[in-house]
Every structure is written in structure tokens, then in C-alpha cells.
Image (cartoon, rainbow, N blue to C red; front, side):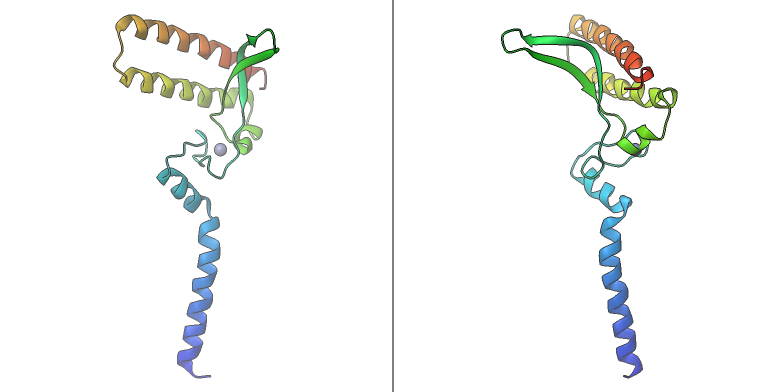
Length: 139
Ligand SMILES: [Zn+2]
């Protein structure tokens, strides 16, 4: 084998390795997630196209239908399962509050009457209390 073929073989080996390694890096998967508009974990930034989120139920359980015994409860998922599992409730809380901040910011960008705005802000305040209670309860 001459020197030229050795270089080509090494080049192809490295190139193939990169084709396998790069798509499996979190950076690449987050790049794909971001480009597709996925949101992600507020703690580590990994996107929901590949990372499993931790769901937290909060607030009262409401009955949607007495007849069929359907209940609904609000839920949110600002953190991935990994970040959630490796932190304490106190460490998680700021991430959850940041999520409510984002809801508020998104809502305030909408063009709504001041009365509607006031009511919605009160609703977010209530959600903060419910979420805080749920998070500190380890949910
Ligand atoms: Zn995370």
C-alpha cells in the first residue's frame, strides 16, 4: 500500500467516525431541536426532541365531567428528568418560577385589554403559589 492510500483510508475512517459521533452529541441534537422550534430544559438547555421532561402537576384537581369522572389538573415541565432527579426541591424552584416568568412575558406581548391583562396576571400569581407548593412537596 502506498502512502496516498493510507492517507485516504485514515481520512475515510475519521470521516465515518465523525458521522457516527457528531449526531449523537447533545450539542448537535439541541441544534436540531432549536431549529425545529422545540423548547427545552430551563436548567441544562437540552431540547424536548430528544430529552425526557419531568412533569409536575399543580393546583386543584378539577372535575371536567361528573358523568364520566374525568378530572383535569394543570401540569408543567420546565426541567428534564435528569436535572430534576439530581437536584433538591429548593434548587428546582427558580427554574419553575422562570417558566412562569416566560408565560407572563409571552402573554404581555399580546395586545389585550387592561382588564383582561389584570385578570391574567392574577391567574399567574395563583399559578406561582400552586407550582411553588407542588415543587416544594417534591413533585
Ligand atoms: Zn436538564
